[in-house]
Image: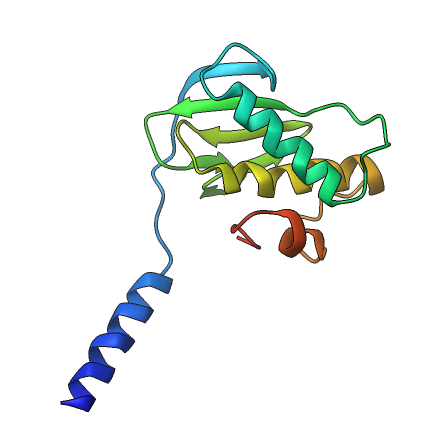
Length: 138
């Protein structure tokens, strides 16, 4: 019985960690200022500012990123791959209704770029773990 239980736990664990293929969203629903005219604007701005503060950049006059929200899939095209979100040239690109932690993760890229000139696409910075929500280094 315990072997069967261990097997069930192992299969469940491996299934949860298996990479997921995302379908790229393609239809632009909103593109513009982070504090723009869309339903979750206030919550998104709050999260991005929390990331800035977590990174110790509260006093720096950094601009907020802009955002592009897309529909039609659960991922976005980021160069040669599809991911839950990406940061390209000052723009956070996410599918509509993405988890707020994905936006926090992309905000870390934004503030790293503004502070150091490197958005850290390899996710080597400690800030992803400390301030990037539950999306650590995908």
